[in-house]
Length: 417
Image: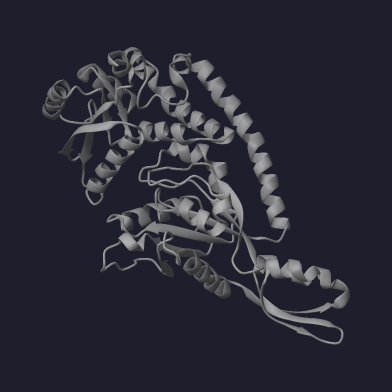
């Protein structure tokens, strides 16, 4: 029994550090809480936390010398394995801090990359994460003898691994180039699939939102229990873009795409690496922005998502805001974005409320049409029902008189009949 206990993997003991400045004071506390949640998601145990108010970060250590001494003492007392900074460290700051504190030091960016490495399941996802990690770590390899020795395990070491980090810069650049070539091939396949969905005349809906807002739960509820994807109450539970078919009425069908959740200060390396995945959201007809109404920082989350949507040039796409987890929200909750649906996808009627809300949005977006369909073309009626919202079908002497609503982008299907 003793040997078994000794062989159990020890949970990494972590100390968090954050710098509060004028620029981040509005969301500093929520950002530090998020850093704690991210650390737990990565498997770490948060033992202590230090913050400091400064006009600007220290160029050598990010923090002042006095705070550095306090942290050094806390590391010894708390038997700390890893220090995680909430701000992005320069390569030189990283080296200086590890030399001064004599423990592994990483920043928020490397922590997020680590979690992505844990969560990636598809071949594409793993390639994208490795590309982002190598791009991030490349400038940090020079003069990092002690730093590299501490990357052998634990938080911040998932993905490429120690052996790849010890390759010289030329080999790492070569690996990044190889990954880019492989991802281009994957993107070609993804583009082919996107084109097929466009040509099929299927209305496309995309889920977007802050991480852990409930996007995967919404997809599972709309798709059906027999086609569920992984969902859990944790940050970045799913990473890989997933597209499935859903029925909004007995016949009207749409594709639903779930993309990676966003977060404050999402590493630019990840946005670049996941560009092809995030582009799935740019090729939809309607975006559903999912917001966790129970989170006290939901307004900050909303602004984070809106900023990323602007960066990805998604503002031209119609949006339906969905405030999820209303069963856990404050009784005086008031939505800040509109149009909006307030619901809980876990409730019995949650999925139906959402479908109703989507259909109401479609009635606003779609254009009216009238079609005379001869009886000889009656075989096309089921396809029309799948593509359009039918209001009325009248059987006349020469055929069907059909009226309804359809997306402007799909009007060509009606015009070609």
